[in-house]
Amino acid sequence: MKNAHILLIEDEQDIRDLISFQLKSEGHSVTAVDSADKAVSVLERGENVHLFIVDWMLPGSMNGLEFIKKVRAQKEYTDIPIVMITALTQPDNIVQGLDAGADDYVTKPFDLNVLQARLRVQLRQTPGASLLNEELMDYGMLKIETKKCKVFVNQQEISLTSTEFKIILLLAKKPGHVFTREQFINNIQGENIFVTGRTIDTHIAGLRKKLNEAANMIETIRGIGYRFKDVS
Image 1 (cartoon, rainbow, N blue to C red):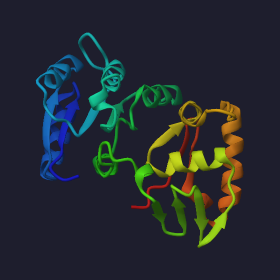
Image 2 (image 1 turned 30 degrees about the vertical axis):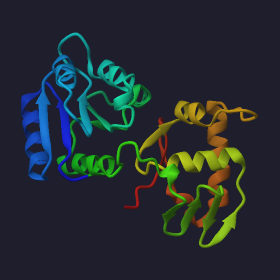
Image 3 (image 1 turned 120 degrees about the horizontal axis):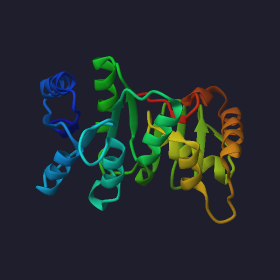
Image 4 (image 1 turned 90 degrees about the horizontal axis):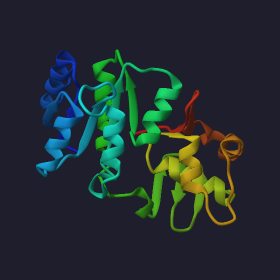
């Protein structure tokens, strides 16, 4: 998305200024604040935001994690991408950030080019426009017909269970996004479908085996979960 309005919440001025400068040089408008409280004030003014960049450790009445939870609880921001940037690098921290509603998690210190690339991935996802509404999802050798619930590898249809299809569809609709095992459970659990964190790995292993040459489209993020390879 070109000319996006990005709300940046970062209390370190050097980092805030650097990110703001780079984003503006790409044609985006940036509102940069140093606390979640000020960010809330921005939202209360009714400003249209296309992407949030949120630091975890923030001064004031709420930290970045609490701000993300507050934002996700509001219907108008359900589909707005959120990228968390933080010095907290432990797997448990990353899981907390993603489970709170962040779409990506970038640890400090980070390469600015890598951050920009990850932001571009998020901005390519138009808010509210789910790939589930597309009849065909085309990823080269791998194609998914969403309405017919069919998956093809090199033009050959492969047979998947209902759970396997739900998993690959969840992954493929958001390339580059890391899904935790808990998120898989929350999204694919349903009538006659019972899954646990332990069985997710088994389903993924079976899915990869069936995908054969396209198995590498599903990437393992050690200690966190899985993501669909971003081929764009």
